[in-house]
Image (tube, rainbow, N blue to C red; front, side, top):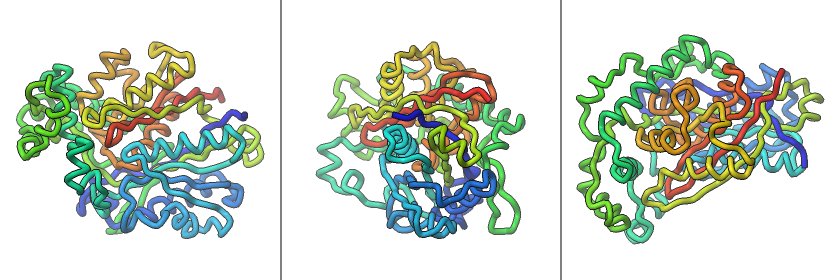
Length: 402
């Protein structure tokens, strides 16, 4: 068994997941291929040394179908001899791509690989794959496949959070994200992308630095009508003890849809030395978890608890928690149960502020955890994402001293 390290990390800025977004004119394959070229430009890495390219994507249809990892690798000019594969674990696809690839390196099946994720929500809309989990009434009924926003409100109701607590968390993450960009925390990893108008896009465009609890308090609940359309009934049939669902989340306390991509170079220390790369963090372990598909969004936290137990670590020993902000309620739950305050939980902001690019988000969480550990001088960090149908993945990292 070999230790596996994060050797490099790059990502695009996150664009609004709409035709008005700055990445809408770029196809998902183009986003990935652009990052592959950036890796070569930044590191001098010979692409022929890469033994596999593993890319997560949640909606693998249309422009995100037909194994876009292999397609992007060919279009990036990496040659015919570099394989590629696309994986899907819903919103946890990108982090699962990293976890699976790290495990293969650790086992000796790979020496040097690239893993990450991509999602262009503006070009391939959510649920456009029309899988039975979304579109078949009988499957939806038997599984209890409710919308993520209704699941978030169910969790908020079960845990007893108040609307003002959810709003306060959203203000916190927007404030931290704006401050992090002002400090230049993201300068090392973000690769600018040329906009359709010829200007450079180099900053996550969904952040609202002027967000206050007063502005958020004026927003209407986002999922109340969806709940009334039958979603509440599905949720309560699985959890009748709840009685009713308080619809508290708004667009301000939900992750905004985003376009984006992220890639990490993973390899052994031997391969790092051979190709002039510096190990930045060791991938200590990973864990997958599954929970009740109706409650759904608690699986990311379950995966964190599982990977920490596997490594023999306590939450108090973790310096950075990069947790995909699948609605405010789940972040408050993690904070209550595991104890990280604002300085350890998403210290540079999260997906409520900067956007959720489904398949890319998990890879962004892992890479952001490496960046944060280096900036803060921490030792251990954990990244985690919850996905649809009650799935979650976590990756535990240990910073490598320069």
